[in-house]
Image (spheres, rainbow, N blue to C red):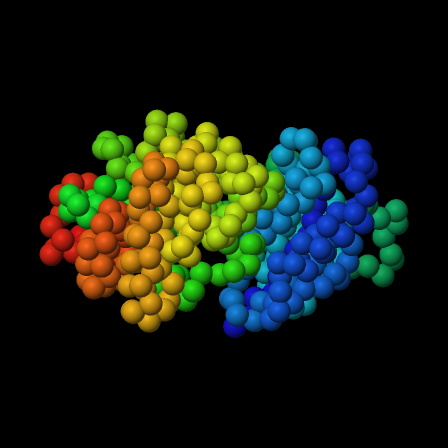
Length: 422
């Protein structure tokens, strides 16, 4: 199981004409990005100008969202202030020989592929990836409906030539009609890789909102690389839109997870912004961002930067922490509306101890006007510990399974938890 692909970088005609950024600089920027993001055991190498071969021994195909992060990074760093569309990436997935053949295509041939004209080489899976979109294009050229060219008349027939058959009556000069290839039925939409967990208010025993979760977290820890986290967050922002039609009415908050460190990077901010620009404006009063991987002592400048970026799209900002002794007393009260303790994968006794320590600082949180929550509550014992400590908001396996859509708001007795998909 190895994914092998060729990554080509196509500069737009306008940029190529302007030649303000030499192709060698673009290649160097892409190489630097891949060096930091495409780490062992994955491999990559430059095989031609603006062409990289990528290999991943643990995947069957490349993640286009991760490649889109590269497109955004290149466009933002190389062409700041320009309208989007300066850089286009194209990925080709096929056998090794086909991948190397694709690497040798000229920029003009790539432009033809991007326009849907295909190319004459071996077939493969081709995707056009820009900061704005990801779309598949055919690798093979379409059937050309061209009339056969008449052969030039011979100046003199050889004496030995046999007599020619009487020519058929002339036909109108119309290109022959070729059979049209059968239209393939559209592939079914890929199943969502995310779901929703209920946010439960312990004092009133009611569901008050939902937070987006990733199904991959049920089997493995969250990835650590910024590129993987960005791709994961962008997938979550895309998937969340499928849940919006089910929550047009009501007051419950919908929290979407975003990486702390990616929220501090201009290129990643631009990627988030493009996704968030598709969201309905009337939903903004109910949207919350839960900023995970918040460090124990975050820079005030970074926090203010994150708040300024999120403020236009989200009504609530939640800082998701892992240290129950987080120094909330050093934060201005307007930085976040809530702070949530994400329980670590530790023995039960350590998790219960973390809940108690987090709850012991309730007076400080109240003085700041900041709500407290606990994320990742996995059993009734931990749920009881949160209730006994006076904590209000909880979510996790003990509250609900990962649901296909945000749960209905309202009273749900604690003895009926966890909520399950209908």
